[in-house]
Image 1 (spheres, rainbow, N blue to C red):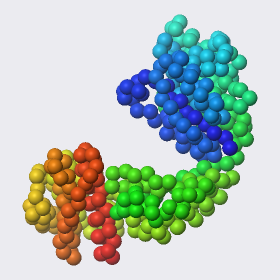
Image 2: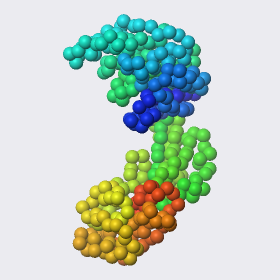
Image 3: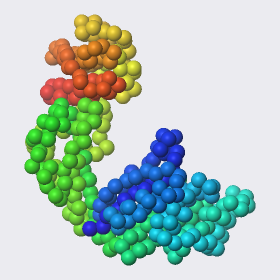
Image 4: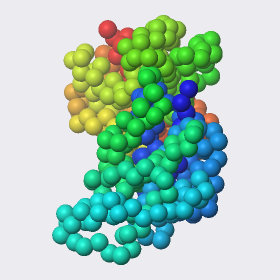
Amino acid sequence: MTSAEIITIGTEILLGEIVDTNTRYLAQNLRGLGVDLYRTITIGDNEERIASAIRESMEHADIIITTGGLGPTIDDPTREAVARAVGVETEFREELWQQVVATIARYGRTPSENQKRQAYVPKGSLGIANPVGTAPCFIVETERNAVISLPGVPNEMEYVLHESIIPYLQKRFNLNEVIKVRVLHCSGLGEGMIDEKITDLEMLSNPTVGLAAHTGVVDVRIAAKAKSENEANAMIARIESQVRERLGSVVFGADEDKLEEVVLDLIARHGLTLAAIESGLDGMLARTLRVPHTALFTNLTPDSLMQALRDARANAHADIALGVSVNPEHETRAAEMALITSNGEKTQHITYGGPPRSLPRWAMNLALNWLRMTVKEMG
């Protein structure tokens, strides 16, 4: 079973100056190759710490992929760190230098002397061309490991990954399996209650089933490893049918589906129109729904919420009206929700025990799911 770890390099990531998107992209592609990802790490621009992390990863995993730290400046230490980790020096490669020269020449410039640093790689490593950037890549091979160093610039990393690294990994590790993942999105039951209903499925080894709780939404992840995509899909389908049977309408979508999009699509398919009001959500409901008739209020009481909702529905000539009001500063944090349809008026008062800043999104998601279930019941 081939395993991997990813080491993302860059102090700017640790400082929160940029968001690391490379790890997610690499993880998805490793999954598609049937490689088990054990761990991901982010390390600052420190040669000794990077080398230590690489040595540790080499003990655990077959494939170690680093991203970042291949630039021409003194704070780009990946080449030296990898060399230190495997106990060799770096060496100059003329062919890699000519690649750097050619790339820079395309912009009408001559490379500076410090850019020669990019043509140094660990001794004995496989040099990998980077036709879309100035940072050549490399692979250090041991009897067990492949330590692969890729650029930190996402479009460069992605290009080299597909053009050179994936074919190398498939050949070196005889990768002939795939890992497929299906994520079912749920609302209306908490993580604990969903866990009770599918506990036995969570004990499976292949496919595996796991839960991830978000704010007002719980994901059920089903992952299968197989020799082919069709086989993996069939394995997932068998488990998905059991999950859906046990959870019923709690499951509102899968994979890229979003709760608000599912709700709006459901309303549209029923030929209905929607008006909405909010209080204490700082415009979150309006931004999420993007419907013409969404009004913002402040400090609405339950009674004034319903009256404002009646007015909004009448003014918009809407079939359905949804109202949500929260007060994160109140000692007893709670959500007031109101709903008007052709079947009448309904209200809900729900208390909340989580962090105050999550209250608006929690209330909004619960209200949207309430709206979803109400429209489904309308037939």
